[in-house]
Image 1 (cartoon, rainbow, N blue to C red):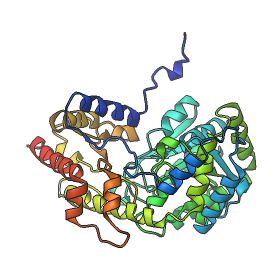
Image 2: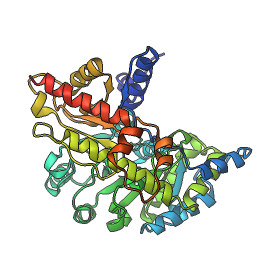
Image 3: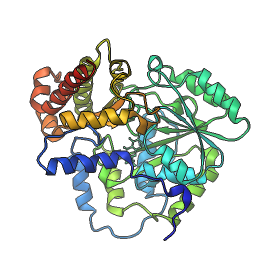
Image 4: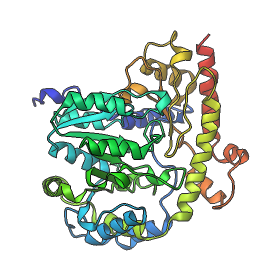
Length: 413
Ligand SMILES: Cc1ncc(COP(=O)(O)O)c(C=O)c1O
């Protein structure tokens, strides 16, 4: 069959591809440090799993926008976090990735992606033939945009509608922008539409997560779901909260849903009501304490005078930059990561998958290769996680990072 020209170069999403590759290496008996794929290491809270079991016999198709009770639960949950959405603003989808895809189908204008940019935004734009502007950021700004950069692109795009996709805590850098309020005010003043991908916001290490939507609610679509905070990526449930002034977009995405996935699986939606209505503070606080301790350890190990790295603000990624140390050794981040995997068994994702130029020697490390259930069960909410815990419950993370450091020092000589 003939395939449309613009789809011929489409590759499998790199995160899924690295998952397959590492599994294959493991099945051949190699010891692999699986720092490539970004999946929560923690089990889904047991009360939510029980709710799914209880609702397993729910078999009817649900409304395309999602179950009303679930939309009410999400709106209420968001209100508790100082957002101002009601249930009519919420759309449930089979993961936020699908909702982002529908948004890219519907949106008429140009798309702005700050680098680093999550792996799927750009391929989705290619599939939909949307025009994309990548914007460079730098280490000093924690890999986030400055007003100067925004102004340049705003002038260049002119009168067309502008959709910017902002993601923080960021995948891959793990960081939040420095001045959210100023940034939001600028976006508002200049009429940008914001897709705030907040899938890691409940894994923000500080409790006071600040959203662009708090300062610019009328122009910010908030995207979140069960995949990261609740460990339920495979359940495939995400939502968009769409400001009232984009009612037409809300209707269009709902209509697209009716013609594509119809509705998210019924038992999953019933279980998600529990996820949003119940108090999961204990689970979340323990998960975040563990992730933060690992992030700090990774940061301390990478933070040498030849490797640039920023302490993550949340999520489960860190993005060290080896450009200075290894510039005479590797021409591209892909070469660097392939060699690293070959020499040490450590799998990471190269910076070019996130929009960096090929020769920028950065990679994303997902610090999730540990038994989250055991770690979670071993700590209580108020216990300070110490080095001994790390060595006992996340030994591969420590070992794998040490391997990277030793390897990079050897390569630099
Ligand atoms: C930044 C970012 N956005 C969106 C997603 C997609 O999440 P979902 O499982 O809701 O489709 C991911 C998943 O890896 C992600 O890292």
